[in-house]
Image 1: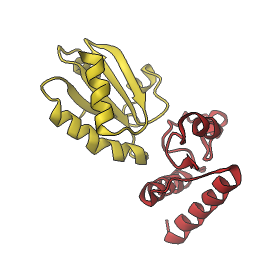
Image 2 (image 1 turned 60 degrees about the horizontal axis):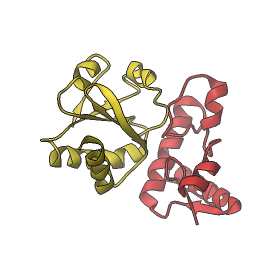
Image 3 (image 1 turned 180 degrees about the horizontal axis):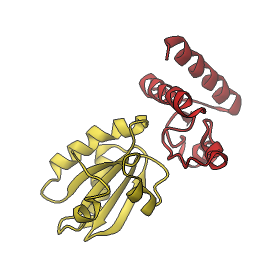
Image 4 (image 1 turned 90 degrees about the vertical axis):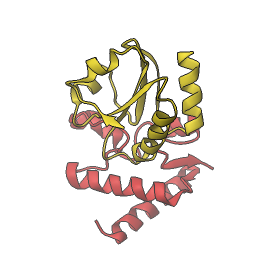
Amino acid sequence: MEKITDDNFDKTIDSDKPVLIDFYTEWCPPCKLLSPIMEEVREELEDKIGVFKMNIDENPLTANKFGIDRIPTVILFVRGKIKSDFVGYREKEDIKEWINSNIS
Amino acid sequence: MTNEEVEKLIKEYEEYAKEKGFRLNPDRKIVEGLVKALIMRKESFGERYCPCRKMTNDKKADKKIICPCDYHLEEIKKHGHCLCNLFVEK
């Protein structure tokens, strides 16, 4: 899964396809559990959405802009705007259902 | 970080959970991962700051996120577990 930064964040979310961003830190064990699941989601839904990750310790500007104080936080952007989000670990099928209900 | 430190902290949190009427996550790997992250944060930043919350670097504000944090009781009541899944309801 491609890691994005404060520098290319705006360009990344400004997409015709919905974009999902997994905000994480290296300290956070639930982030480590969620990461491979997000990778599977990316592979399974790559025709529908883009899935990226961002380390908020390394990219504080974006984290502050969106008030991210808990991790993992996952935000779905549609045409550059927040459509929905969730905080904490979730199972893959729950995430796919959440995505499908927000982009259909 | 030694295994003894990890085991000691797991025991401390087990006793705390028992006292409060909930329990530690039955998944030992999750608990070990969280406890190791908490010890690393203590070594790096001086306190066991929750690894699932962003530190503000304001010591007064960050006091709220020292594990067990100010939010865990309400989260367990509301969601059945704390944000990090260290503590879960019985």
